[in-house]
Image (tube, rainbow over all chains, first blue to last red; front, side):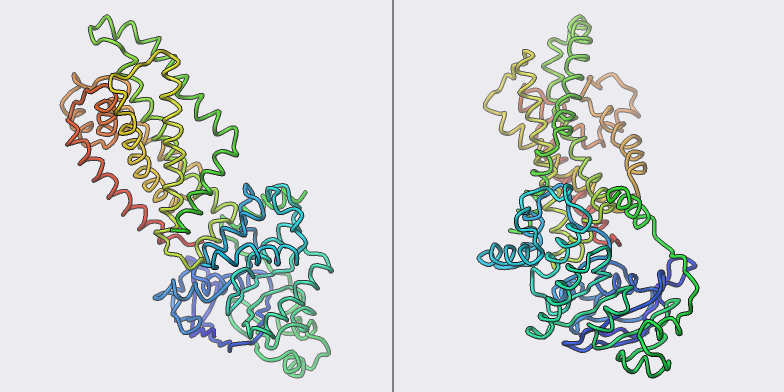
Length: 262
Length: 248
């Protein structure tokens, strides 16, 4: 489903992703874990056609993400790490717009939007402008939206960031169900190791733009001779705190998000 | 078609929900009409040119539509900063459609604002000589607005922030506007300046507006329409090429 072949991404002098190669098969739940600035989001941005790789090839569902962008885009859904809803529109309008962009048949839009907004408990607030939502509510809306068009492949970039335990559980339950019942491929990043351990069928550690280990949670623990995935992770990536390189848009958004959550 | 429609609709909804934008879009042209119309009207008459409001209103309509349509480029910058742009960029829809849907929406709101100026000018005593041609005038304004919205989305695609966008507005769009003959006749300008005005697409839009509303054209309506068509095509190609290259 996903093929990444010797991919490198440079921003000026910084190498964000360095000669990365991996493959994810249909129906897998694949977790990409790493410290801040390790290259997780850059990898997802390249896979989802938002950035072009400097070198190497990547394909989704056998469509090259550079040469065959539209076909590649048709293959996936994504929940972004940072906000991407239109806050001047209502939740319902955001969902509707997404459904149209992803060619959901008109007859099914209302039904699916209702089902998903009920799942994330936003149905009662569907006609409120999103700018009146709390941070957690916006996040739930983004998740509902990412699931709206029943993609074959779903990217979740730190989907549970800032969510309470109830919503986190709900989300993973639903994702597990989609993976089981529809054989949906899931590719996610997270900073919560127990989430990865519980939900991923395979895990890769990435650090300084390179993949340093890959396997099931059991294999990774065995390899490092540790008892939990968190210990395995810390053993491989070290305990030093990283500074993240951010592009100006991300930095700007970050400031605004902080302000709106205050 | 559904995709174009929903993106068009988004622009309209956002316009009608923003009271400050509606007030601003009426306030500025009203100020121009009052300040210039009454301020310069008597001088214009004394110079033997006739009724200034007659001359001015088509120009102010174009001014309103021009700057309102330029605002669409700013919307792209806002969408990028607030993250919404990514949602449209990863969708399985060609970027051309994404840009066009929004640009036509932005152009529609720009034309609505231009039409409001016409209504206001009725109140101020403006009477076009060719009432039946008002729909043609509105259509000309819409075509110019689509061209400008496409152009501004091209600008919005590679300018990093609002400051950069404003700089382009100040150094490119304002001069083009002042050299378009919208506010005053440009008959007696030095020849180098005349060349500038003759390569200025806004000049032809203003001319076509005057032709429709008061039956006076400097270049002639045929030339105006050809210039508008060329402007539209070049802007669309420019906007589409730049927008396709956005990385977020």
